[in-house]
Amino acid sequence: MGIATRGGCGESCININMPCRGCFGPVEGVEDSGAKFISALAAMLDAENDEEMKQLIDKLDDLAGYTYRFTLPVSLLQRKRA
Amino acid sequence: MAKKITINPITRLEGHGKIEIFLDDKGNVEDAYFQVVELRGFERFCLGRPVEEMPRITPNICGVCPTPHNMASTKAVDDVYSVEPTPAAKLVRQLHYNAFMVEDHYIHFFFLSAPDFVVGADADPAVRNILGLIDKVGLEIGGKVIEVRRRCRDIIRLIASKPPHPEGGLPGGVPRGITEEERVWIKETADYTVDFAQFALKLFKDVVVADKKHLDLVLNDAYKLNTYYMGLVDSDNRVNFYEGKLRVVDPMGKEYTLFDPSEYIDHIGEWVEPWTYIRLTHLKKIGWNGLNDDAGTSLYRVGPLARLNAADGMSTPLAQKEYEAMFDALGGRPSHHTLAFHWARLIEALQAAEDMQRIANDPLLTSKDIRNMNLKLKQKGVGCVEAARGTLIHHYETDERGLLTKANLIVATQHNAAPICLSVKKAAEGFVKGPEVKEGMLNMVEMAFRAYDPCLACATHALPGAMPLKVTIRDKSGAIIRTLSRS
Image 1 (cartoon, rainbow over the protein chains, first blue to last red):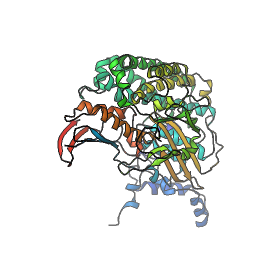
Image 2 (cartoon, rainbow over the protein chains, first blue to last red; image 1 turned 90 degrees about the horizontal axis):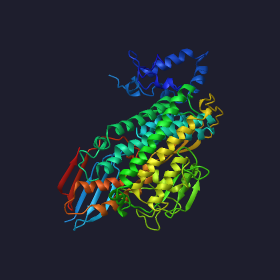
Image 3 (cartoon, helix red, strand yellow; image 1 turned 180 degrees about the horizontal axis):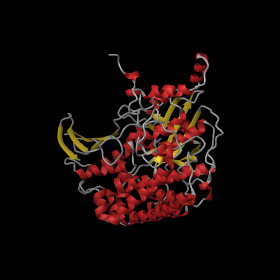
Image 4 (cartoon, chains in turn cyan, orange; image 1 turned 120 degrees about the vertical axis):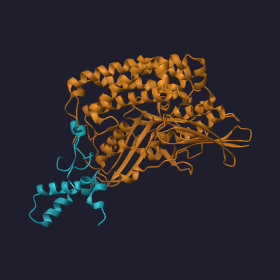
């Protein structure tokens, strides 16, 4: 998942046909890995209006758990406002 | 003056624990406790995660039993989704599992326990370790130990990515199958492992069984505990590491109960004591009768000797011969001699190696039918395997979306915790004599629990740490009168 997760692991999970979970953390230059992931996902959603969008998003269980699985401690969500 | 001896932290086990030995005014042992002083809590922070992710989370509990956690978890997720793996997928899982049993049994035997026998229980701690062992048995044998473990870990790596943290494990199967090219080298490894397993047993018999001093130690009453025994058995009551029913035999060797692991809650009780973080398991229908091994005991043991005691035999021919020879030498089944766990461990490694051979020779292994996608969420499931150090149970419950609402893990060292306390006390009574407490005496106490191959990280689901040994001897008022240390 080049847009949201960093490689360098030798694709050890992909090689045994298991999905990447992003355990190497955020990609360099991306300030908030989860937001980037959601942004990429949103671009693929085929919705005409907000209601349809909400229905599609609700199909994803535990969205924050998936998109911030290894990056929540360094995400914008964890920072205090200056 | 009464003294208190603290062995903290104890060495050559996984995790943190300490032993407290209380001496009376004459310097003899009055009481002893094996305490676990760490806590983690996977059962709590996994809540809310998708259940199919558990086989990838739970191996993080500890790097010692990652494959059993991965496998128990995968089987629990099978059950949550009411699905059976395809026959080929089951073979791949069993191959992975047997490779783990071999390499884990050997790391315990050669690295953690054999130094006590080969180098000597009261030898200088500076040589009573793997390097001292290699010095005694020779570089060639040391090299073979490393080679057999490397080859088995290559099999784990092929199937599950990382041996210390397997990533495979899907409901209804496995993520990748085995090619014919891979099957060829897997078979070579299985053959090599069977040869090595027979060699390891010969070494044990030459060094321990044929040596009267060592055999007397194995048969010493200070290392004996009359308990029940539990282990997974197949439909013919033979030892099985991957599946089957849980069989419990009483201290006389008679079947006490046989049940499906999903009914564990009816049979296994968990007792809380204020001095340890481990919930002490016992036979629920008898009820908690305290730390004793008299006629009313409700304590049972798990692990290699317990599995052999609880079964009527091994499932492979060479291991079966060794099983018979061991019980002949120990005076029949069941055997209550705790140090015989080491012997049983090597016999189990032979069964695992022979089973790898069977799987490697099965043409079904290379089938591409590795996933049963007929999933139906029933929101509750139990998975059970025999980890190297004993029975491991994962129990999950989920909401209607498959997100975890409950997790209960019962691990090997939890089953053995109460018997370990009792073993420590008996060994302390047998070997620790005041007023001058020598380091060798304390190692004899450590040997009592080391035989169980305990993993405290698992038992409390906590992180293991570095383990230098520190022994503090205190008088009754708590003042330190002597300190021994080992680094």
